[in-house]
Image (cartoon, rainbow, N blue to C red; front, side, top):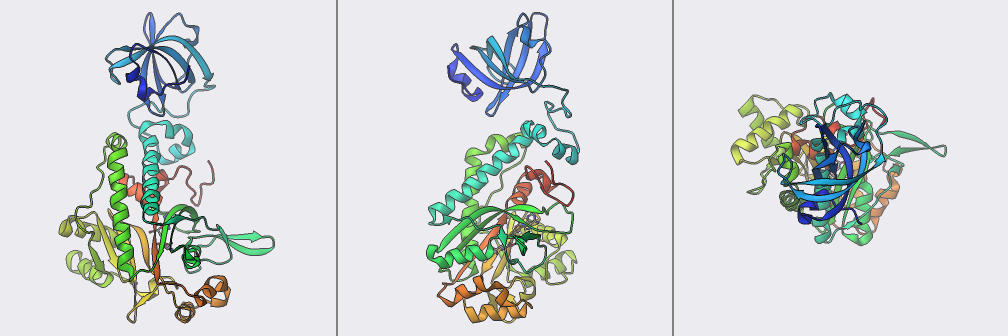
Length: 429
Ligand code: AMO
């Protein structure tokens, strides 16, 4: 007989089934024992006769194969239960669990949670995080594929940094210097130039960030896209807005159970996401919050206050900030006027989740831009030379997946939205 998922038991009332899963909880009464069995689709109460020798000494989280009949029976989980005929242990638990995972909330520190990652992920509420992640990633892929983008895979070992030279992990690559890629920036542009016009990648990238913050990882997942034949950066923001709407729609269709479990509302995009220029944002912060913006950039507090403003003024949880100064954006960014750029960030619930913009597609302008940044363009020749051979106007963006997920779910530390986070002190699991 084939395995039935717990989710489908209700359709099998009074039928014989085999289910497989983990022992979530055991409650022994005088003549019978209740075992709550958990699989990827849900939980069910199984009723076992105490004469069965297997239940004696059965530990939580053991893996069982259970056959029995689905019977009507109201309990805290379902309107049915399983009357067990036979039990088989597929994998036994050897020792006491280091953390208790069958409680309503997982009340342990972040470090304990990450040290015992596989067990903590078995907790329903933690398990839900990466189910939601899957819906986001699938939504990104689905939307872009439908819009004519193709998925690409770019190198993670590279000869030069793409984001301006800092925060690079250096490697010894057969006695040559190499680096772990910070982003697919050059390669996604090069694939656009190769004639694909519209490309995307979901990949892991590396930043040797010195700071140990709740919003930075040393390895993160970047959802990148790049497209050609745009008018300017507004087209890129249009695409991001449509893509986010698609993802939110999908979360509503497929993620409601997880969001309910986590007691979190799915955000809404009811009107166009406001787009304000950096200078205007700085003015808003000064006039409304007495917050002075320094160094042509928004610090975490500035981002948080601007989100507050977007919520109050536009009833929006998202806000685009555009036209960052040339000083603050990497060498590939298309300038606008004397000091500005055709760039933007998207801020969601108080934190930047996206950077993007139009790129320079003119060879001479690009060489000059490298020089302005104090970089020798000859060190980047495999990228820069591409622009000698006809590259259309183009641009793109990147969304930090772990950051988006953390903000979406109201999780304070980004380490929790990476299954196996890498930070300055964490290399295992
Ligand atoms: P940027 O460096 O702003 O832009 O990165 C894009 C997005 O990636 C996420 N992110 C991170 N998440 C976790 N830990 C980190 N250390 C980290 N660094 C970045 C953020 C950020 O908004 N090439 C450009 C994008 C482009 O223009 O297409 C880039 O990499 O959510």
